[in-house]
Length: 467
Ligand code: ATP
Image (cartoon, rainbow, N blue to C red):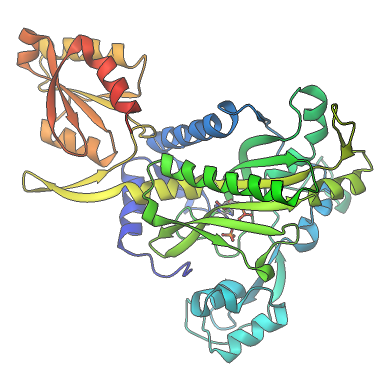
């Protein structure tokens, strides 16, 4: 993947639309920004909530074998020793001696020679490959770098009023460990038997060396993670469960309306696997800068619970009430990123076409996640029309995300709704006063149908549930 190449056209258009229409703003903008941070605007926050709600519905609420939790961001630092993050959650950092740009040695190699050239390579080997292949600084073109050194990605902070080494704590770099350390609590307080899973959505922080590609790589982001616990020892069962999750996670992206041809699986080869995993498959999206990871599905085995049992000295074994077997469960982890999902949804929905010979930009969001489901547009700002339109607005907002707009020419208002991806627009005109019907316009085809006001709710409901 060619991360951090000059952004191509579509990416630039998305960055600009996201800002112009209130989806995503650069973080701390009025103070000149803060690299690797972004803020969601009024439309972006609803889009994000819709995506997260669907995720919780599919992976937690609609399943009989799932629970949710919401664990703390600040945790006992021993957790990060046990998980391996203190020791090995790092990237190879190099500085360009000429322009002082900081780069990730592995990513420079990956961009030029492909991922195979870099997996499993030591810091020294990374330096050598860069020299041998005359890979240069992406900013100034110089080939003169410092040695590669290991840079831990965890943000550090201090707890309490006195800053000293013993108060050092970390902002969590993943939500997963919050699930593992609560495994025993969940088993003791709930009734499901293994196999079952725990899901949570929450913020994670990584001091990325090279944040970039809009929200693809940020320093503060949200994850939607699941740890699925099963009895260890049965390889076939593990494989079967892994394959079922593989299908589920792919279906999740299709369910968001992402085009199938822009999605693919990529299995990690042996050398690329993380220290805890015996098998990992990523779902990748075809971003404008190349294929990139959207989520990872990892077989973590018994690694984490074994580590936490050793470090905490607590018995974390599960006692099967039916068989009386005691064991540390085998774990499969589907791990999704919210920012990359939202970026994917924005990129995949973006389209340009012509309506009545006029150019239009249209975000073809699935109606299930569009931040506004229905726009109510009185043809003119005349009391006899706005009165009816306001009544429809008040009725429909009980059920759907609705926006009322009575300012400007109707064509311009349609264009705005197309650009924010509103799937349905209702226009109240003078005929409405006679026939108690309105026009219902479909965003994608721009076709309009006359629908009775009293049938609107049912009709929209139906359109939302038809795939
Ligand atoms: P990458 O190789 O791109 O750095 P990763 O393999 O380190 O990603 P994981 O640790 O597997 O990522 O995290 C799970 C998910 O969290 C990723 O698939 C991605 O969607 C999201 N994620 C990870 N790091 C970031 C980041 N810096 N910015 C935004 N999302 C991220």
